[in-house]
Length: 111
Image 1 (cartoon, helix red, strand yellow):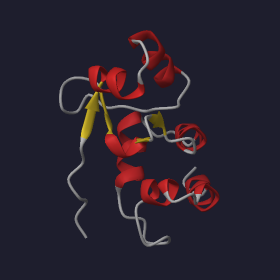
Image 2 (image 1 turned 135 degrees about the vertical axis):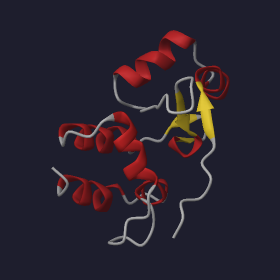
Image 3 (image 1 turned 135 degrees about the horizontal axis):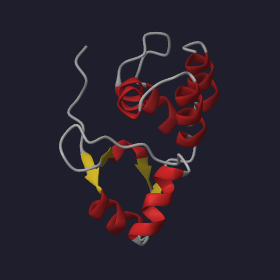
Image 4 (image 1 turned 30 degrees about the vertical axis):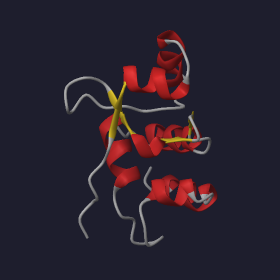
């Protein structure tokens, strides 16, 4: 099943959507509340990583688990967006629906 087209948010988009100054947005990356990619040029984040004008709350712990498993930022993003057979949808869809324990359990098996 192909991955649906991903909407990407650049840093200026995040400043506007989150209502935070650029310095605070950079800290969200440093503290692993968000993970971004430069694969399309400027640093950007999939729009699915933001919900109700905030970084998705369950994202941080999942990012940490994946990075501890040796994933690069791009690999973290790709895994979160790809269909995961064992849960029947993408991990980011499961996180957005409140199923962080299930997603993190699968992420821990990747180490």
